Length: 462
Ligand code: 4AD
Ligand code: MG
Image (cartoon, rainbow, N blue to C red; front, side, top):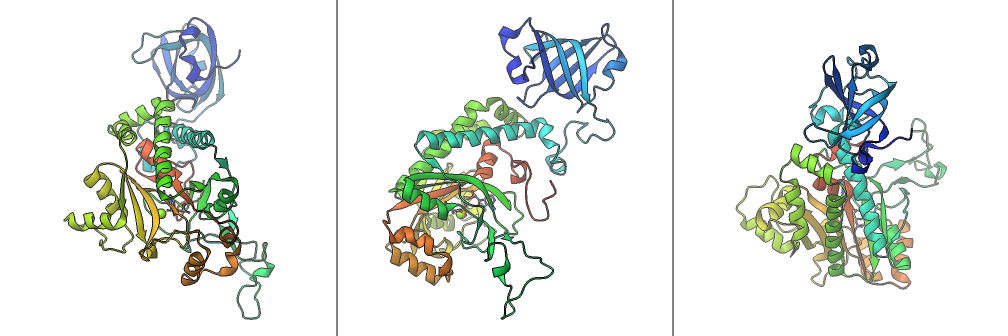
């Protein structure tokens, strides 16, 4: 008999018919007359209840059915009298695929902490919580492609191995095939990279933006969606060494167009998740954070505040609040400052613009004041910075001067500068941290819990 996924089984038209389901046992309970098994196959947060009439099965047959075991059951789908479920299966046949030893299966009991489950990342997707989180993650990825596809953007694949440090933070993972125990040396005793795989030092990319700009100044509107890597040693609930980023880049967009797109984009994604992952979000709302759905709806309803950095700093200085990190004009804002503006002062998302040029990357468009650049960071409740972006400096001379001021090696940048030498245009873009969006939509509070296999300092086992 053909298998029906559990997500499809609660269809009233199937009541009375014979069905086949396959999945992993969540619980078994009952008495010597009847046994109830809750089965989950990952297709939905919901379990299907299977009823074993013990006049038709032996104790021996049901013994291997323990939490975590995998089984196949056929039987008749009937309306359920049980609370909270619409249908159940009266079992006819049972096949055990794999047992799960009650002594050693780590998820035998319910109610493990998220910290404990982080240590069991290879199995944690089998829990209700992580099943929900990773279904939401998948739904959001689909929403992103949908959004840009509907808007006529092209999906551009940018390289993961690169020679350039887009953000200029110097936090890159080096890529090499040289034998680290026997490095070839050049005459001046430095490493001879001509003998390395690419003939030059290379690293994993921190951002696809620079190549994205090449795409935008050819195809008009592109977006990237891929993994990025940062070797910053920041052990926070919001940083990963490997995270996914979505980077749209648009020719002929100024910073206002850029902000409009960012706001529309993020609202679309949240609404899409509410519409297409309703059961999972409701579960997370009920289990972890009963303000979650309210918060998601609020963000969709409200216009984001748009505020220059200088005014934001004024508000922080006048707040009378004691922050861990000092606030002054020129300071790189910390998440405590961002969250004060969003959660306490404005009570809605804020797009902060026109940051001091010293704390932003070389490619941002310089303002007439000579001090600030046309940057835009989108700040969110619970999260802080969720998007970073800007209008780009399209003037060749100004860009070159900035590159020289920052001592960025020019030999690495000639191809990027060509966009400004040949048919340069005003253009803008931004980067959304995918895991930060998932944090917001799921209400999880640690970024390690929204990526299947987190990479953080000292953690890359599985
Ligand atoms: O602000 P960032 O560094 O901007 C860029 O990389 C630009 N090239 C984007 C662009 O304009 N095309 O990073 C963008 C976003 C941040 O706002 C944050 O959400 C996320 O990426 N992010 C991280 N997420 C998880 N772990 C980290 N270590 C992150 N660093 C940045
Ligand atoms: Mg940033």
